[in-house]
Structure formats: C-alpha cells, structure tokens
Image 1 (tube, rainbow, N blue to C red):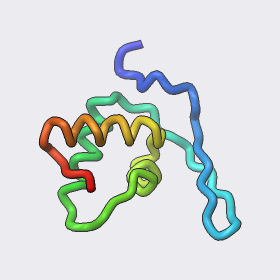
Image 2 (tube, rainbow, N blue to C red; image 1 turned 90 degrees about the horizontal axis):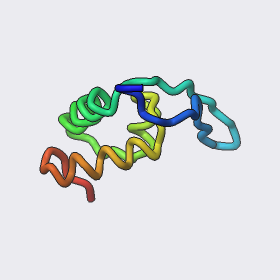
Image 3 (cartoon, rainbow, N blue to C red; image 1 turned 45 degrees about the vertical axis):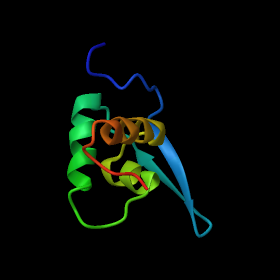
Length: 79
C-alpha cells in the first residue's frame, strides 16, 4: 500500500568482530526515511551507508537509493 518501502525483509544482519547482530527494521515511508537521512547528514561526521541503515533501522538497499536521490537533489554530498 501507500507509504510502504516495498521491502518485505524485516531484518538485516551485520557481522562485526565475529558477532552477528540482527536489527529489526522499521517500516516507514520513503519520504520520512529521506527526511531522517538528510537530518543525519546535518551533523559534521563521516557516515557510511551501513551506519545510516543501522542508526535509522532501515534496509541498506533503501538507504543507498535515498542517499543517491538526496545527492542528485543537492541536499547531501556523497564522497
């Protein structure tokens, strides 16, 4: 339906130092996710896609897509 990310995956796994961490993903609209990502970029620190996905509990693929959109719109810069 409207406002869904279209992703049926609820969790993603991140491997850190031999430990597996499972994160429950949030189901929020693309518009809301974009706003939250843009807000993260207002802070003066380097961000990796995986960090954004983990902090906001969003699907990594969605984060990459939205960051690329925000970059094209001139709202964030990706190095």
